Length: 387
Image 1 (tube, rainbow, N blue to C red):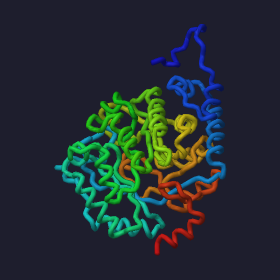
Image 2 (image 1 turned 90 degrees about the vertical axis):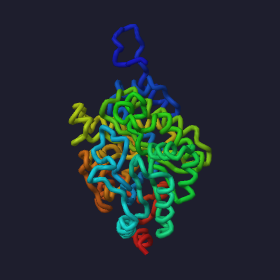
Image 3 (image 1 turned 45 degrees about the vertical axis):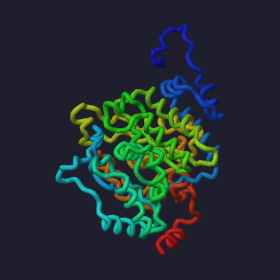
Image 4 (image 1 turned 30 degrees about the horizontal axis):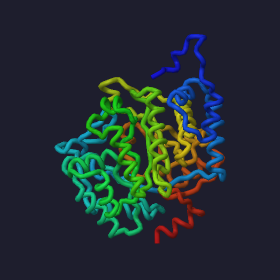
């Protein structure tokens, strides 16, 4: 693979950045070489202006989405033991837990009281929890709270369950959907490169497995999201390839399927992680680099409608600038987020604060659901949701 930064000979032809940007604005699929050229040679202001143009073309009404949902970790036991995660525990650890039914009730009732209706349920690859556990959990939650939306698990957990049960991924997804699963988060993507995954999380699903879970989910009519955790051991080429994989999977979805509704990139949070303390890998992603990532993301992912700025990991001011660089969503107020918080993500918003931050950036805050359907009035819908 060519490394564009190695162009030193005057006889070599440098890529035409203006032409690449124009192709992106026109909704054309660019190559990995073109994506790397954008990263290495385009000016930040140039990228921001182009991405902002695309954003306005896709979302001309100046709305910026936000959502009230709650992150709940079903368990902290995970056999993956990723080197960037200091939340997970082994099954024999004294701090290991699996939530009980009553643990969900108080969380759900508080979520409803705050005007939300969705649980982001994440756990891990627990060695003992099989398909029946998740089916029973989802069915019980939906029976007690029929209006609750379950945005749950992720490709690594789906693959883990399928292997444990000796089932095909599509069969696991069908059974979970029948039990109440509404949508699938893009968890566990990190960087979609097997070189990186082998070093950071060798027990997790491969790149191909992650992408195939999403392919099956889209064919079954599920809406999903996609993510990227960057700023550790990956190369720029691997970042760009990650985006191209997502673009290509989205292009394969059935015409009537939503597929990936959003993409959320965030920088690796390194506090107290094995990756930092044992291997010396630190998060060195600057505000400028994060904004560049958002802008290039918006230019490359022409078929994924929404780009979310991760205020949780980069802070209010950087996230606000991202709204002028292609992002059109601010995500959740993140009730009870625990995984990246223990690795150094300490920023917080309540409903009032997230709306104020969006307004300060010059946009209109618009509360939405996971399907990116917008509510006209937050106070009105809050009153309705809590009845």
